[in-house]
Image (cartoon, rainbow, N blue to C red; front, side, top):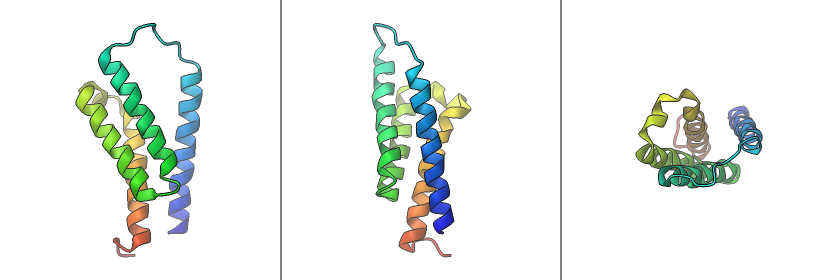
Length: 107
């Protein structure tokens, strides 16, 4: 159980580090479309959920998954990009870790 929790946390750290490196090299157009603006705001929500999940695994995991659902509602074409599935997968693992620690999941 403890190993699983730390494995998920390491995955979230790697994800956050990758996002930091990716965003630092991006050049942004002067004007973003409305779906792109919403996508960036939702992506920030997902990243905040990734950080929050260290304190509250269930809450952070649900924020990550909810953010992904909102993003898909705004930009459904992201479902075809496999790398976009990494964040909700980590969110799901946080929810599983929370369920295991709360006893909702039989060991």
